[in-house]
Picture (tube, rainbow, N blue to C red):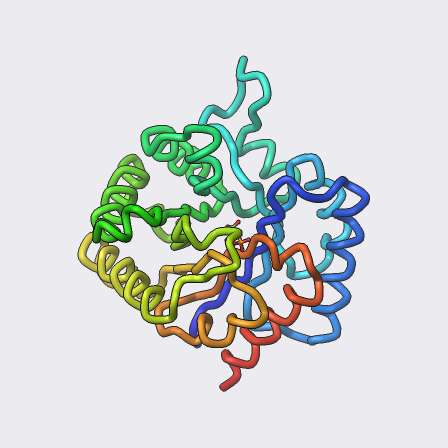
Length: 257
Ligand code: PEP
């Protein structure tokens, strides 16, 4: 059966109280679906991790951070470490989201250190990669993906690749309401799978490759149905429990086909 991960990236949205309510709605909706074959992951802001964990504690919903630093402790005011995420019950962390690359000037060098530190500490990493609109127009998409994958995974030991998930997120599709087309997504995901096959061999077949960028309940069927798409990293639509649950239901329908 195809692997499917439906991950909600809440970004800088929800207070702890609001996060609890949102998590509860998602949990109740999931419970009414019964046993799911897809994995569901919630990535609230750091300040809400504890509150959300309390809600999802005895469920199959997983918890993730939206970022973390590469050092495990020390004088790094404002940062948080993989160990802190782990102790709060996180099993995943998103690294290299385009908003962090753009607004917080995270370089591939920093992302590389973060990926390897988080994985060594025991987290699964969702590494975000993707081209800007200008890069796509210049036919640089695959050169950019190759550059990011080579740089961002440089320090990772081969044995740890099983703990890395790739999120292909074209920058121009994030938060714009305009997702990439089925053809563009299929082409990019085939390319990413092939990249890993060439580099790491057959383990590439087991890797989870997510799509992200204006994925919602109105386009999830055709996107999740693409051969090398193993789920989605969802921003805006993950804040709406009805839409998020519809996406999970669609994933379930596709898995049971
Ligand atoms: C994201 O935050 O990774 C994302 C894909 O956002 P959105 O779904 O809102 O485009």
